[in-house]
Image (cartoon, rainbow, N blue to C red; front, side, top):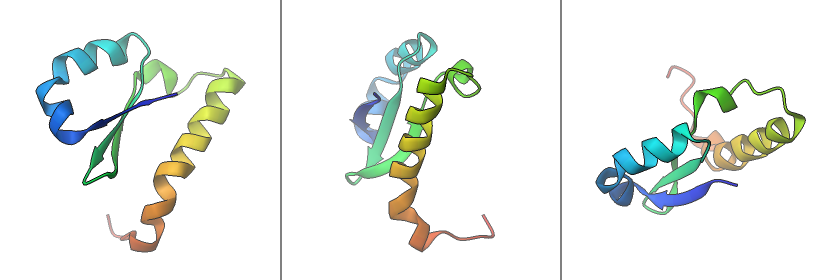
Length: 75
């Protein structure tokens, strides 16, 4: 499960977060209390492990849902 951290904390601790992400940790970085971006290691993006796939799909839908109403299709 990803760790949630604010954007200001992520800025101050970026090197540490990057090192942890490379080791397999995931982070949801928030801005004004709302999901802003996901920091994850690349090898987890294409991992065929079904557990990772389910967690990734759930995480993506959880982060995406609040923003679907405001999605700009041109971006």
